[in-house]
Amino acid sequence: MDGSDSKTALGKGERTQIALMICAERLFGDAGIDGVGLRAISEAAGQKNNNAVQYHFGSKLGLLNAILEWREGQLEPHRKALLELGEAQGRLNDLRWLLRVCFEPNFRMYQHQHDVGYMKLHAAYLATHRPRGVPHPVDVESPNSVSYRRAITLLGRRLAFLGERRLWLRLESAGTMFLSAFIQHAARREELNLPLDELFEDTIEMMAAAIACPPMTMEPSR
Image (tube, rainbow, N blue to C red; front, side, top):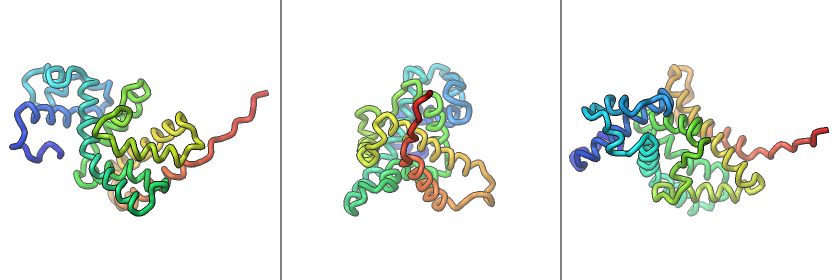
């Protein structure tokens, strides 16, 4: 749901929360999470109460967490379906398929909604707040990340030679590569772009090559 569907089924408080999350997502993606004040989010969402974010989410980090949970909850059914299909087809040891489970739902959201807002917010999060230890739903027992966590567990088995720390660092770098490809696609002139589905497949190939390359062996210093 992008905030425009099923409005009549939502209460006033829920509609306000969604409006705040959508505006914050856009502002965080454009200006960086640290570069946006809570009052600006309230104003962008058309709220008369300048403390609307604090009232509904407690803090900026509470708002960021709510956006991540909300969006990952929208992506979870697609990831679950891809895992089930991969299991039925015997593809859960296939590196490219596991990357598809992790990233295709984000791509389809962009393709269907014609909106790069969550990708830009996620890129901003990876650049600043994840390195500070701010968790993503995949880091905790969130019901919105069950399939994502399973896919990463399977990736860990497939790429066990990397070790856990290197695997996570590479996943973050690969995620940044993926997000950048589509953020740039949204900004680039159409005649310079690849077709969307072709770009997605090409990006998965690049990610698979990058994430699976053997670690460099460092020579001891003399």
